[in-house]
Length: 245
Image 1 (cartoon, rainbow, N blue to C red):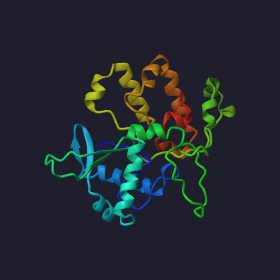
Image 2 (cartoon, helix red, strand yellow):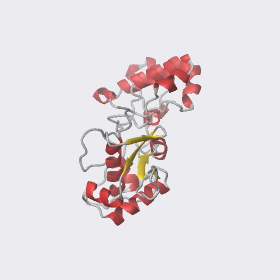
Image 3 (spheres, rainbow, N blue to C red):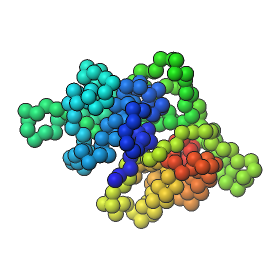
Image 4 (cartoon, rainbow, N blue to C red):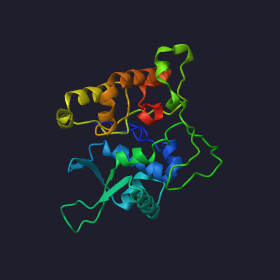
């Protein structure tokens, strides 16, 4: 099964959601995305034009989630569709069936939350959740971005990344065999090594071509930054989270 994300946890679906998504788009939207992500990984998902979709009516969503009415679901869908995270299409072969097919634009989600998955200030549950359409600016800048090359050879004076929230699975989709075959040998090697280090990067990220010029340094720095995370290094982190540049 193709791995997708963190911000969307894997496994049997509980009524939970990513704190980062909840802070950025509201608890209801975060829960909806979590459930949709889980459904897209299930056998009920349909692959149409090389993308997974899940077929559900508003009433079915209300029943599936168990906590929101169809009208609330409509507002959630409208909000997420407007920011480009949610893909909604009518793909039934029977044109008279108007039920929506849903998918998640993982690349858009990653771009919108870029920088927002760094250290997040967890607010008291007594405070009202934020329902803005853009990520909250109350985030801690990752100090690892200021890491110097010399830090690789000076462990006693190395600057460690701030505590950041790793992912149980990557946000970016894994490259297919066909995509890997289409890559140059060097680019494929760099991509595969970054994936082995659990760096959450999209296979057509423009930085891969740029990093080929300093492949050895990038891989050394990525390995070093992951080691600073201790037992959390087994999770997935985006280049932005680690300050990998």
